[in-house]
Length: 204
Ligand SMILES: [Fe+2]
Image (cartoon, rainbow, N blue to C red; front, side):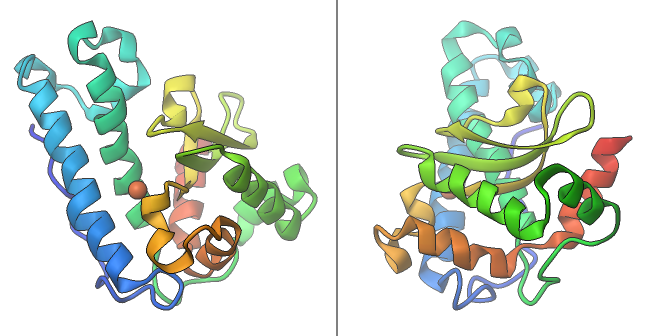
């Protein structure tokens, strides 16, 4: 199947004032659309790959023909990452994880505040463009990692449950060079229900 933009379940202005309307509009309608168009254009050269789940291609990029491997890595990764990112945000959601996820965060990081600090540090110190992630490792442990460009931790055998886009296109119109402020404010719109669900699914 050809890749398409996912349906956004909230309006472009729904995450105000933390994520501004103009950024949401351009980020979704232009940047994400470009990743979708570009990965489809690459896959057109090997149309049998439309039968494979995009996530499965990204999990094992060596199975992707070399001629389109970098395009799939960058644009397929961009599509996959942004699809998750939109789902991980919501207006007025729970401000913190709960239940088994909170217990695991407390056990791994020493508390929710310490987790946020670890995650924010990964996001702040990712040089250039990339992402910060909370993942489950192969042995089901929580870990904070960051990736460059549009790389996704599934390529390293990890299962993402939280993702933050720290490309300048994600924050520059509102926060300019103040990436730390964007990271801090973004926590106001995290959809912890989705993080919790991904945690439960990943633990299986
Ligand atoms: Fe982005």
